[in-house]
Length: 142
Image 1 (cartoon, rainbow, N blue to C red):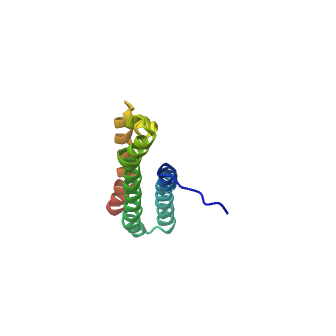
Image 2: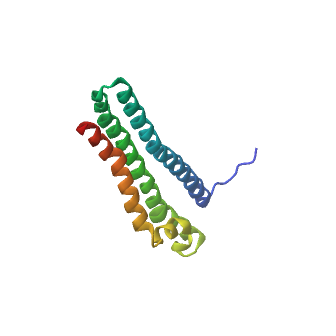
Image 3: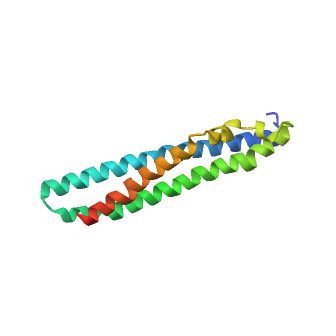
Protein backbone atom coordinates (compact mmCIF):
# COMPACT_ATOMS: atom_id res chain seq x y z
CA UNK A 1 0.00 0.00 0.00
CA UNK A 2 1.59 3.30 -1.06
CA UNK A 3 2.18 5.88 1.64
CA UNK A 4 0.30 9.12 1.07
CA UNK A 5 1.67 12.43 2.22
CA UNK A 6 -0.79 14.64 4.05
CA UNK A 7 -0.25 18.33 3.59
CA UNK A 8 -0.86 21.04 6.16
CA UNK A 9 -3.54 22.46 3.87
CA UNK A 10 -5.38 19.14 3.78
CA UNK A 11 -5.26 18.91 7.56
CA UNK A 12 -6.60 22.45 7.90
CA UNK A 13 -9.43 21.70 5.46
CA UNK A 14 -10.35 18.57 7.41
CA UNK A 15 -10.30 20.61 10.61
CA UNK A 16 -12.50 23.24 8.94
CA UNK A 17 -15.01 20.59 7.88
CA UNK A 18 -14.98 19.12 11.37
CA UNK A 19 -15.62 22.40 13.19
CA UNK A 20 -18.29 23.42 10.65
CA UNK A 21 -20.04 20.06 11.20
CA UNK A 22 -19.95 20.68 14.94
CA UNK A 23 -21.25 24.21 14.42
CA UNK A 24 -24.07 22.95 12.22
CA UNK A 25 -25.08 20.33 14.78
CA UNK A 26 -24.99 22.89 17.59
CA UNK A 27 -27.12 25.34 15.57
CA UNK A 28 -29.76 22.66 15.00
CA UNK A 29 -29.71 21.65 18.67
CA UNK A 30 -29.85 25.27 19.86
CA UNK A 31 -32.74 26.16 17.58
CA UNK A 32 -34.70 23.10 18.67
CA UNK A 33 -34.29 24.12 22.32
CA UNK A 34 -36.64 27.04 21.70
CA UNK A 35 -39.31 24.65 20.34
CA UNK A 36 -38.76 22.28 23.26
CA UNK A 37 -39.21 25.18 25.67
CA UNK A 38 -42.46 26.21 23.99
CA UNK A 39 -43.72 22.60 24.09
CA UNK A 40 -42.84 22.25 27.79
CA UNK A 41 -44.53 25.54 28.64
CA UNK A 42 -47.66 24.50 26.72
CA UNK A 43 -47.70 21.07 28.39
CA UNK A 44 -47.27 22.50 31.90
CA UNK A 45 -49.89 25.20 31.27
CA UNK A 46 -52.37 22.65 29.89
CA UNK A 47 -51.77 20.25 32.78
CA UNK A 48 -52.16 23.09 35.26
CA UNK A 49 -55.40 24.27 33.64
CA UNK A 50 -56.87 20.75 33.46
CA UNK A 51 -56.03 19.90 37.05
CA UNK A 52 -56.90 23.35 38.38
CA UNK A 53 -53.61 23.43 40.26
CA UNK A 54 -51.79 26.62 39.42
CA UNK A 55 -48.91 25.43 41.63
CA UNK A 56 -47.84 23.23 38.71
CA UNK A 57 -46.67 26.44 37.02
CA UNK A 58 -43.81 26.51 39.55
CA UNK A 59 -42.16 23.85 37.40
CA UNK A 60 -41.61 26.43 34.65
CA UNK A 61 -38.72 28.41 36.17
CA UNK A 62 -36.30 25.51 36.76
CA UNK A 63 -37.13 23.90 33.41
CA UNK A 64 -36.72 27.18 31.53
CA UNK A 65 -33.47 27.98 33.35
CA UNK A 66 -31.97 24.62 32.38
CA UNK A 67 -33.14 24.90 28.77
CA UNK A 68 -32.10 28.56 28.56
CA UNK A 69 -28.65 27.83 29.98
CA UNK A 70 -28.19 24.99 27.48
CA UNK A 71 -29.28 27.37 24.71
CA UNK A 72 -26.73 30.00 25.81
CA UNK A 73 -23.88 27.50 26.09
CA UNK A 74 -24.54 26.22 22.58
CA UNK A 75 -24.89 29.75 21.24
CA UNK A 76 -21.53 30.69 22.76
CA UNK A 77 -19.86 27.62 21.21
CA UNK A 78 -21.39 28.44 17.81
CA UNK A 79 -19.95 31.95 18.02
CA UNK A 80 -16.58 30.63 19.21
CA UNK A 81 -16.35 28.29 16.22
CA UNK A 82 -17.12 31.17 13.86
CA UNK A 83 -14.48 33.35 15.52
CA UNK A 84 -11.93 30.53 15.29
CA UNK A 85 -12.60 30.03 11.58
CA UNK A 86 -12.44 33.78 10.87
CA UNK A 87 -9.48 34.61 13.09
CA UNK A 88 -7.28 31.54 13.02
CA UNK A 89 -8.12 28.78 10.57
CA UNK A 90 -9.01 31.01 7.61
CA UNK A 91 -5.86 33.15 7.82
CA UNK A 92 -3.62 30.06 8.10
CA UNK A 93 -5.20 28.52 5.00
CA UNK A 94 -4.99 31.84 3.14
CA UNK A 95 -1.29 32.07 3.96
CA UNK A 96 -0.74 28.53 2.67
CA UNK A 97 -2.67 29.29 -0.51
CA UNK A 98 -0.86 32.62 -0.83
CA UNK A 99 -4.07 34.58 -1.15
CA UNK A 100 -5.47 37.55 0.76
CA UNK A 101 -6.56 36.56 4.25
CA UNK A 102 -10.02 37.98 3.66
CA UNK A 103 -10.47 35.74 0.61
CA UNK A 104 -10.55 32.51 2.62
CA UNK A 105 -14.01 31.55 3.84
CA UNK A 106 -15.57 34.83 2.74
CA UNK A 107 -19.03 33.85 4.00
CA UNK A 108 -17.71 33.75 7.56
CA UNK A 109 -17.19 37.51 7.28
CA UNK A 110 -19.80 38.53 4.70
CA UNK A 111 -22.91 37.57 6.65
CA UNK A 112 -21.65 39.56 9.65
CA UNK A 113 -21.55 42.74 7.53
CA UNK A 114 -25.30 42.62 6.80
CA UNK A 115 -26.88 45.97 7.68
CA UNK A 116 -29.89 44.27 9.30
CA UNK A 117 -27.75 42.01 11.49
CA UNK A 118 -28.03 44.28 14.55
CA UNK A 119 -31.83 44.44 14.37
CA UNK A 120 -32.07 40.66 13.85
CA UNK A 121 -29.83 40.10 16.88
CA UNK A 122 -31.98 42.45 18.98
CA UNK A 123 -35.19 40.67 17.94
CA UNK A 124 -33.61 37.28 18.68
CA UNK A 125 -32.51 38.53 22.09
CA UNK A 126 -36.08 39.65 22.79
CA UNK A 127 -37.49 36.27 21.77
CA UNK A 128 -34.91 34.46 23.93
CA UNK A 129 -35.65 36.67 26.94
CA UNK A 130 -39.36 36.13 26.48
CA UNK A 131 -39.06 32.35 26.18
CA UNK A 132 -36.45 31.71 28.85
CA UNK A 133 -37.12 34.55 31.35
CA UNK A 134 -40.55 36.18 30.96
CA UNK A 135 -42.53 32.93 30.69
CA UNK A 136 -41.09 31.36 33.87
CA UNK A 137 -41.50 34.68 35.67
CA UNK A 138 -45.16 34.73 34.62
CA UNK A 139 -45.48 31.19 36.00
CA UNK A 140 -44.17 32.41 39.34
CA UNK A 141 -46.53 35.38 39.38
CA UNK A 142 -49.58 33.26 38.57
